[in-house]
Length: 382
Image (cartoon, rainbow, N blue to C red; front, side):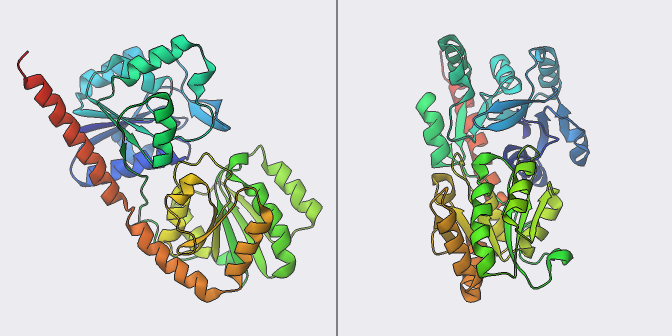
């Protein structure tokens, strides 16, 4: 099968949708399918060579409390037509298909059967900021999708409110060949201190400020501990650094961006992985990554995280925006090594259920079903 995987987001910048598409491409290619990724890019995606087709230049645009790097050019039509006429895809899989302008232009032109995956949840969609006419156009393009996927029940509820239809739920996966408990930790953090790890962008909804407040409570109780932050973000970094100095906190490491290849090592270095997001998470990919490496998780009990974390089994769920409860849960695990080990073992079992080989197989089933339905419809007598 010849498959196009389309991302509206900058493929040269890390993110959940970009990672999702990369993992699908790897699985489909291993299975013998011919796959092309189509996306805007701020830098070359040399790791996949000619399997990547760059269309558009990304620009940072604020969307639902985050910064999306998308192309907003309206001059994509000619290039899109040329690519689809040359490649002759059997199916095109759009991720966030209503995100302008790459995905919406491909939908409008519709040169092959179309499947759309909806990832987002929470906040106000970008299209609610515009006129009813814009919503009318989007609805027309939405109807051009031949099949629809949501990554969780939370994501389904979110999109179904604006565009009601039938959706398959197929979650994000985790690469258990990449994230596993046999990796080596990072040497500089292997000094006997208890490591608390946060992986995520430094933006408000990821909740790092609440973890910092919790750490202020934890440090006097357990002086021999460390907080490690991994993930991109510049705007809030200075604010957090000032707060760390004001609190007089030691052993806080703001690592910043780390390449995907290094993430398993950071998880392996951790004794506890902590994810204090305040909401608008459709699914806990980072939770699954930590689980796959065998680490206990402390996370907020928001809907997206609850879809993968069972409180008391793979970790502990706490209320969002509550540093005291967050500190209490982390202290409980710091003081109970056996509980950490048991939760880590349960996490490995849970993560295997989300292995990308299983997820990719479910997505391929949607492709096959979609093509079968289209062929049957075409073969029916008029």
